[in-house]
View (cartoon, helix red, strand yellow):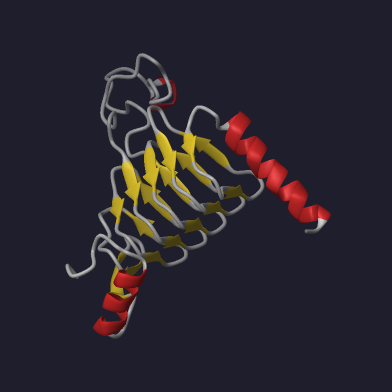
Length: 185
């Protein structure tokens, strides 16, 4: 093992065990440079998670196993500022990070199931469920739930096609990875 790999593993362990210790992050975590992770109530990240440089998680989230984010991916809230408070400019309004915040967005959790790839520069709004095995194309804006084993792209993101061209290949894959969707898709 090279010295660079050892340093990388040590950095990832420090991030997981020190900087992000209040969150539930499993082994195999790797974060690129300038990554920020924050959730008001919950951040749960499964095994073998990769988050590319300059990416942000700024919402409550549950992420499955074997998920990867490209560079500059963002998971963000929909209602991070109380913009409907009469007489208060948005810049001065309560924010979801404030302990006294009591407006929309509380309790919204983004769920990203196992084996998902979110491409470069994509943004996912909180409260969305991205189904197992899905791919989000680069530069997409995900505002609604994503079907399992589908490819979504665009602004807003829409289904482009299924991940597998042959339904038999999909069923074989589901069986081999012991997916909860085996026999259902």
